[in-house]
Amino acid sequence: MSQHLMNTYARQPISFVRGEGVWLIDAEGNRYLDALAGVAVNGLGHAHPKLVKAISEQAAKLIHVSNMYHINEQARLADKLCEISGMDRVFFCNSGCEANEASIKLARLYGHNKGVKSPEIIVMEKSFHGRTLATLSATGNRKTQAGFEPLVSGFVRVPFDDVEAVRQVAAHNKNVVAILVEPVQGEGGINIPYDASGYLEQLRKICDDHGWLLMLDEVQTGIGRTGTWFAFQHTNIMPDVMSLAKGLGSGVPIGACVARGVAAETFTYGKHGSTFGGNPLATAAGFATLQIIEEEDLRAHAEKMGDVICNGLRGALKDVAGVNVIRNAGLMIGIELDRPCGDLVKRALAERLLINVTAENVVRLLPPLVISQSEAEQLVAILGKLIKQFLSE
Ligand SMILES: *Cc1c(COP(=O)(O)O)cnc(C)c1O
Image (cartoon, rainbow, N blue to C red):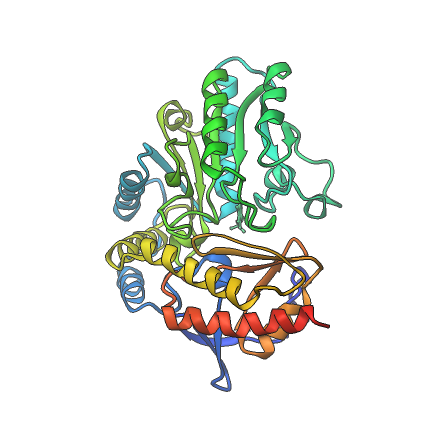
């Protein structure tokens, strides 16, 4: 451990030297089952041969040039993203918060363009949109914001999964220009709307009625994780704007703000930019990621493995007092307990299993999309035993 790193993370006392599929391996050769995938980043697992090949070949050709030039790999990925989403245009950046920054700037500009001088964006309680000033201001968690006031203004907060609250804002606030929402809240505790497609469909209708943009933060839900390319594809609606990052580059930093219709035409020359955004290496990694997900049919597989894990855990934890609910959207899995359970992360580590706890009492699993049935069963066996033991103390 270095004394020269800022103390921004509570790190587990472990480091890894290489990976192989869902396994991470430490310097002593111990193998850990990775059920977190770098927080929904390593969808293809670690060291996927086709990804390694695509990245190595691209690195040998060209890593970076400026956006002052046409970048073929960037254009190819934009075309692919629009083909699989039905959206129109993409702006590339380097992370999830930057993708949301772009969405927020786009919404404000959209507002100004139609004469709203002080545009506001509806955001949700318990949401997470990132750590930059605008995105932490949009985030619905006081812990993320504390100490960084004054916050960026222009956000109106309502409870998640509460259409009536949005309608009430619509009735009296003429400055609103957009809604920014996660289809499934990740950091907030794997919160799935009660009627998941109905919720988004009703938000879509409110946006249409008022000329607002529907902006989905799919940074965690996107790129196959919930069983479709994007979570909105479980519904019949389309967003106007969608933010992507995490799984898109399989670990090579990349983010994207994807837009449709009038929103896709809002950013014009000089309105936004990024030095690294969309460089040849990152966009080659993104393109390879999408190709591999397609070739290996990983969306359907993610949905199936999500069921295997959840049904397995439901069986293992049946009649165990203290388990509130087990919920999932594909391989976004939350096991909500009746008490804080941060200690489970350490206990799992001792069993060579990597998990996460979020919102204090929700065990969060985000395994690689490539997890096999037998690996999923191993995960269930270890975690089921750990949770049972933890709750019996
Ligand atoms: C992780 C996450 C972000 C922030 O992404 P960074 O790459 O860490 O900036 C934003 N929104 C959601 C939904 C996320 O899960």
